[in-house]
Length: 347
Image (cartoon, rainbow, N blue to C red; front, side):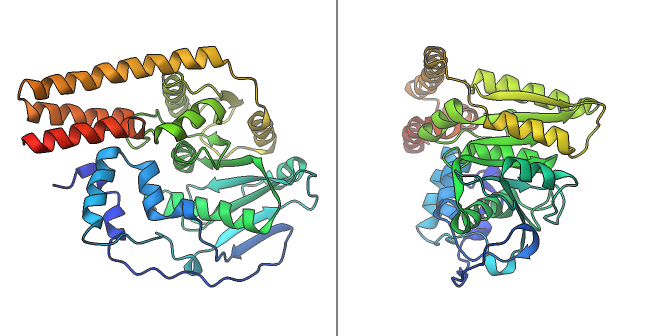
């Protein structure tokens, strides 16, 4: 039986034709350009890679089994049908441009008012996809469009890999957080403008262990929310608490004074980008101790499932495993896979 939480339109990718965009060269541009066509696909946006990083181990197991009889579509996006907005500063920094990939809550890829001057000051390219708003599916469109936007900009312009960030506003900020969690090897941080969630629950699943270790130690998360946006302030607090619990150390709070639920104005974005660029030293001993605590808790949780199997209670073990599948995600992929096999043999 297909698990309910795997129905994030991933199954719609099965048995669908893939049309790769023709390769073409785009002339360098500066300033704001709308309706930009990209043609280059990235391995990081491939369906198999996205499923591996963003879905839980049990979901990956089910999809892998289904793929034996129906091939997955290689890419979710048909690039010739998509359009992007980009902003490129006139002056190129000596180490290359910074890059901000922006996931909007709205359907057009507009540049928020007042941001152009800030992007100029920071030497930062902005890219945002159209038809990537809150009404779109996260795995089918919003995440792969963000990845393809980043990839195509990096193919066309000299980019400082240490200053590649993802961001968004409201629901787009929540999508940006999940993208940053799944792709810490691409995005060095996230600008979370009035939208965030706790990780290790819901859809914000932990990625495989090597990626999550990188997210813990290297990702910079800037929470930028209006002082009057009480609902999102509460969510930011819950999100930051979860980051602390999961040993994610690079969190920063930037408050927009006397602002409600609204996109950041120029001076707030300027502070947020400055905060993203700051990289304080990591307390290696503290991080190691925190990771050891997680490993100890995880081992105890999985031992309880093994005990249920030893007591011939496979159905209870399965219910417990599905909960841990969401809690630990890819961080526990190997152990979840082993227990899934044991449970399957007993059911």
